[in-house]
Amino acid sequence: MSALNEKLDRVAKRYDEIAALLASEGPKDAQSFAKLSKEYSDLGPVVDAIRELRAAERESTDLQQLLTDPSADAEMKALAEEERSALQQKLPALEKQVQLMLLPKDEADERNAILEVRAGTGGEEAALFAANLFRMYARYATLKGWRFEPMEVSETGLGGYKEAIATITGRNVFAHLKFESGVHRVQRVPETEASGRIHTSAATVAVLPEAEEVDVQIDEKDLRIDVFRSSGPGGQSVNTTDSAVRITHIPTGLVVQQQDEKSQHKNKAKALKVLRARLYDQERSRKDAERASARKSQVGSGDRSERIRTYNFPQGRCTDHRINLTLYKLDRVMEGEMDEIIDALIAHDQAERLSEIQ
Image (cartoon, rainbow, N blue to C red):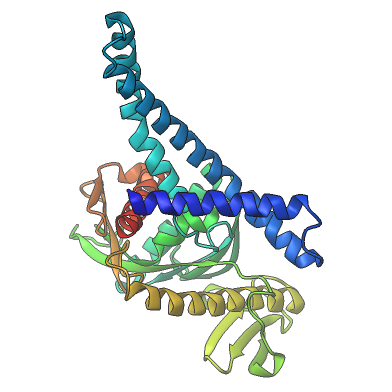
């Protein structure tokens, strides 16, 4: 507890220092002033929580002194015992709240996200499952009040998706969806299966934080841009002009293709948006790998090839393997009711990170 107290004292002291700086002449340049103002604003709720915790601790100490005071009457002591008992129940929650607020923030949490779903092993059934997942996330976004905008959908012709990409815009999108990356496995009887045997197939999900131009500098000379005619499922032409765009980032070999828009310019802008997100994600993954070697545990390995969840349709079961959570409400999960899973993943991640700072 002493280490935590020292940390709380440092935070409160830093808050007072910034307040004094801003109250005086403050930094001369606008950039430093804005940076200090943001730090002051971010620390405000933390310091409020620290003060509430400190006040509760002082009150508990005062009540304990009253209980050991031989001159205090019995009625007063009974009231003090009641108040102290209530405080003792409240203190752990206040302490945990402060600790959670002190956890290092993932600077991408507040960002919008780019969702990529790809059919894996399992042929047409995997493509149909990829389409199911894409719709599940679209419904979840609707329930959260977010905007879900498909960017590129490559259909199989039988209702399945070989690949589908969407932008999801709203409050704290990446914070909620960042643990969805990985392999999602389905077990069910395919509609095309005459003998009624259960098949297992998979789809891969990637959730990337949306990157701004200031986050990732892309040099035009590092890009090879090819234009071609858009085509729909089965190869039928959906456009009579060379509006589809394929961008290859030469240094990394990343390839992004976009053909949903009729305008070549719009397709190029969308492709660059996805490329920027993938480059930003690569850099985040590199830093995460460095940090993970020092971390005792985390929610899954973060590896995109890791099997993270199984959707068993005959049993109506959805199991997240990273936290051993099983829900028997698969129909509702597929309708976008994912909060129970996502909240559990966030809580698990917070608990693991708290255990490392205590």
